[in-house]
Image 1 (cartoon, rainbow, N blue to C red):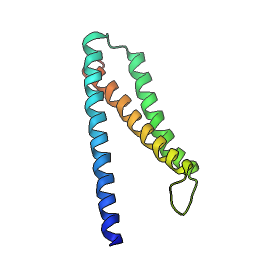
Image 2 (image 1 turned 180 degrees about the vertical axis):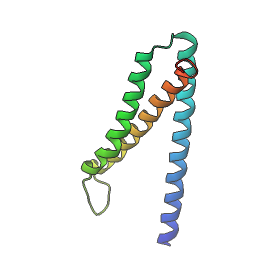
Image 3 (image 1 turned 135 degrees about the horizontal axis):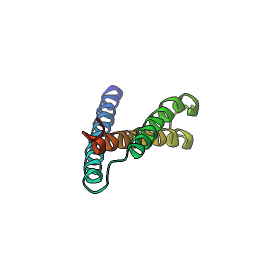
Image 4 (image 1 turned 30 degrees about the vertical axis):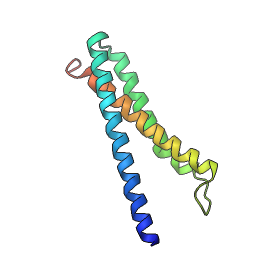
Length: 109
């Protein structure tokens, strides 16, 4: 049935999103820890990482309001690029914020 296919696709999409987010969180944490062990914590660098992460989130969130090119199938090149860009900016922003937090943990506060 069509509803079964929709539910299956929804579950797969959610699972993929959770796995990708968890992977970015883990990698960002370990990169931050590696930076903390080998690179002195610089307040300026932390602020740059935080602003870049917040900018990526803002660009992804607000950008989707204007990036939509609608079609009946939802599979045009513009729609695929839109989805890819949104995910890349969200995951990139998450990585930068987690890295900055992990790098500066206990050092700035």
